Image (cartoon, rainbow, N blue to C red):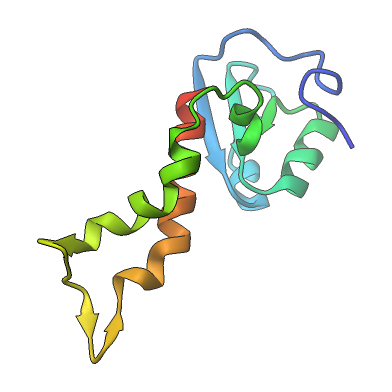
Length: 120
């Protein structure tokens, strides 16, 4: 298993652009000889494969290493659910089922990932 700095001595301090990838098809569309693009993968195994090929890549959780903001950890599920409440009422109720709550996991992950990427 390759690590962030230990396994990637070729990392630069800055990149001109970054590419968010989730599968090999995305990698195949990139110019892998481009050293001005940092690939950010949400797939751990794909990230490892990129590093083995010498592609400048990070796993999306790299932002957690030095993350100081603990607010999202305490409030993530409140933040993920507050969008579908208006006036204290769940406006996504349908036949007794909250449609908004069906997306809690995905929205929590989206909010967390967005916050992590801001820390890169």
